[in-house]
Amino acid sequence: MPETSQLLQGPRFLDRRSPPNIVTLILLASVSGLALNIFLPSLPNMTAHFDTEYGLMQMAVAFYLGMNAVLQLIIGPISDRYGRRPILLGGLVIFLLATLGCIWATNVWMFLLFRMLQAVIVVTMALSRAAIRDMVPEREAASMIGYVTMGMAVAPMVGPAIGGSLDAIFGWQASFWALFLLGAVVLALTWADFGETAPRKPGGFAAQLRDSPELFRSPRFWGYAGTLGFASGAFFAYLGGGPYVGDQVFGMDPATFGIYFGAPAVGYFIGNFISGRYSIRFGVNRMVLIGSVVCAAGITVNLMLFAVDLGTPLSFFGLMSLMGLGNGLVIPNATAGALSVRPHLAGTASGLSGALMIGLGAGLSALAGFILTLGLGTLPLLALMVVSAYAAIFTILYVIRRERILGVS
Image 1 (cartoon, one colour):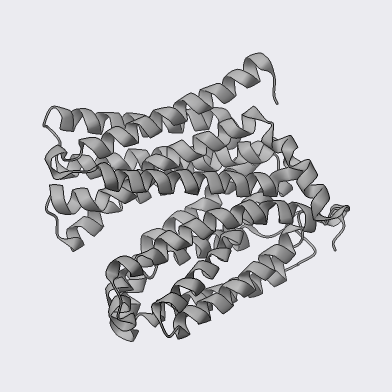
Image 2 (cartoon, rainbow, N blue to C red):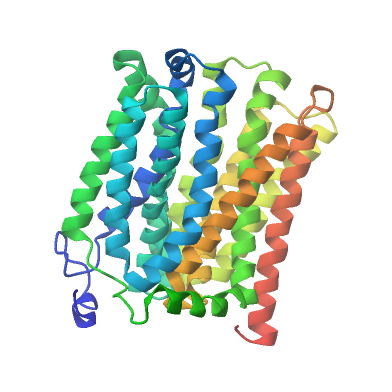
C-alpha cells in the first residue's frame, strides 16, 4: 500500500505508487458509459437470436439500470473502508466474466442474468469520481470531474453508431467483444497506473457503516444529491419520451430521429468543458445554479412555443441542447459538492448520489412514457421536464442558503 506522502507527489503515469493519471480516469468513466448503450442497435437481431419478444429483450436496459443503482449503494461504502484500487480491479474482472457470459448465453434468461452482472462496471464511474475528490479540493475536483465526464459524454454519443456497424459486419456479439477488449485494456491500465487514493482504514466494514449516518444527516449532501437527481431527471424524462415524440408526434424516420435526438449530448459535452475550465474560478455552487437555470430556461421556452402552437421538430430538439448544456454544468459541480460534504466518506457519497440520480431518472423516464398521448403532443413531456428542472433550482438554492445563513453542515 503506498504511503500518503507518495500520493501527495502527484500522478506519475503508469506508476501504481502514485494517484491515477487523468487519462486513466477518463477511460474508467467512458467504459461505464459505453456499456450502457453500445448494443442497442442490435436488439432486433438479439430478439431473433434468442427467439423471444422484443419487450423482454428491452429489459437488458431496465435490469441493468436497476442493478446499477443498487450496486452504487454498496460500492461506495466498501471502497471508503477498503480502498478504491481493489474494488476497481475486482469490479473490472467481474465485468469481463459477465461480458463473456453475455456472448456465450444460450437463452434470453441467461443473457439477462449476465447483463445484470455487467452492471458492476458502474464501479468505474463511481470510484473515478471518488478518487478525484481524494486527490484534490472541491473546486479542483469539479474541474477534473468536468473533463472526465466529457469522455463519459462522448462514449454514449458514439456507442450506438459503433455497435450498429459492428452488428452489420460481424453480428450482435461483436458489440460485447468490443466491450470485453476495452474492459481488458482498462483493467491493465488500472493495474499499472491507479495508485490507491483512499488507503484501507482500520475497523472493518461494520465501522464504516457506523460512520455513514454522519453523511445521511447532512442536509447539504441531500441538497446536492437532489439537484443531481432533478437536473438529470429532466434528461432521463427526455430519454423516456423523446422516441415517442419523434415517431408519433413528428413522424420522423429512425435515421433522422437519431441525428436530432443527440442534441442534448452536444450541449452536455460543451457544458462539461466549461465546467473543467471555469469551476475553479467561479466555485461549485455558482456553476450549479447557472447550469440549473440554463436547463430550466431551455425547457421553459420549448414548452411555451408548443403551448402557443409555434413549436417545430427543430425547436423541440434544438432547445434540448440547452438542457444538455445545463446538465454539463450541474453534474460535475454538484457531484464535487456532494463528495466534499464529508470528504472521508467520498465513496459512500458518490455511490448514494449516483444511485439517487439513476433511480429518480429511471422513474421519470418511465413516467414520461406513461403520460404521453398522441392528442396532447409534446406538452406532457415538456411539463414533466419543467417541473424536474425547477426542482433542481430549488434544491441548489437551499444549499446556498444553508451555507450563507445557517452555516455549512
